[in-house]
Amino acid sequence: MKFVDSATIHVSAGNGGNGCISFRREKFIPKGGPDGGDGGDGGNIWIISDTNMNSLTDYRIQKTFYAENGKNGSSANSSGRKGEDIFIRVPLGTRIINLHDHSIIADITKKEQKVLIARGGWHGMGNTRFKSPTNRSPRKKTNGTLGECRHIGLELILIADVGTLGLPNSGKSTLITAISNAKTKINNYPFTTLRPILGAVQIKKEKFIVADIPGIIQGASTGIGLGIQFLKHLSRCHLLLHVIDITDIRKNNINNIRRIILQELKNFKESLFKKPRWLIFNKIDKLTEKKINSVMLQIKKKIENNQKYYLISAKKKIGTKQLSQDIMLYLYQKKYKI
Image (cartoon, rainbow, N blue to C red; front, side, top):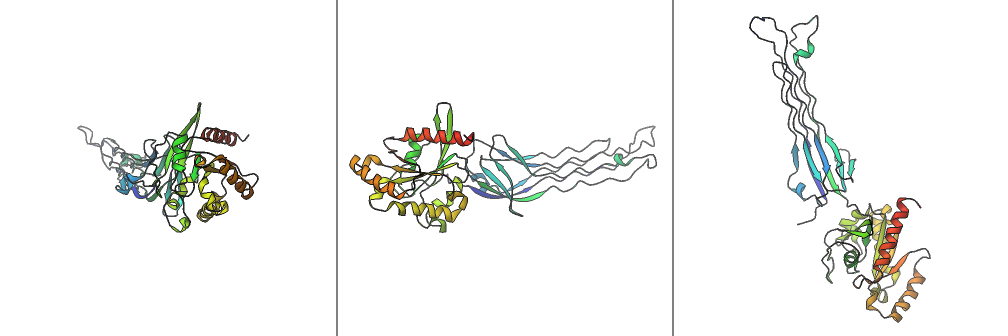
């Protein structure tokens, strides 16, 4: 099934029911007085989080939602029934946007979170409401008001603590599989990852969520390749892991490899460019210890002194345990501001 992370829908809340003009007509009571009931409120439209959903695919098909109108009031002071509410279920991480002014209505980031996006109309009042000492037989009522109508944008931005980025075939998917419960298709092809993938990394009683997006190539910010479509899914991450194939460093200058990714991040969004990044040099199992030492001399000359980096083999799970533990410690310290 195709991954869909954006959709546009139209919502119309229910109209309020009208009030009723009625008078009691009972035997031996010729002047029974007014007994017209109120109408019912129109149904509301809510958006509610659903942890079992991971895409907005449903809303590429169903785009219009109508809540039920409130029923009209009737005689014998009977109020009309309220219109039924509509609940639109979305995955965690969905941002709700009012397309009229492009304002953000809400971010759905919590379990069982519920947000009112279109309020139903108010009920009209029956003539009983207008009875007074000076007006014993009112022939006045009010009609219900119209429910709200809105054009709503839904934008899914995955919720993850850590995100991976890098060139195609750098080993991001293999890393995700090595440290988490994610199941990813892994082959030596460009763009093996065709959609974002989330995995949970469990360390004792604690866990963090890591996201994998398709590899980024030069020119991604102008629409080339797949990565640019999914860069927004890294915006909620606290830490980015820049995965680099260490065997490529022999062919390309390390600064060139880093520059491609960093430039695309900066072109996409400055805030993403400024996020903390760790360099993860992958596939060390393909090099001899002598070659690794030689490459590391080049790396240390090119990176900043405070730049955190790791040497790993995701395929052989070399260094991945230490990496996971350090990530957990980093997130813990960040959460509690240690």
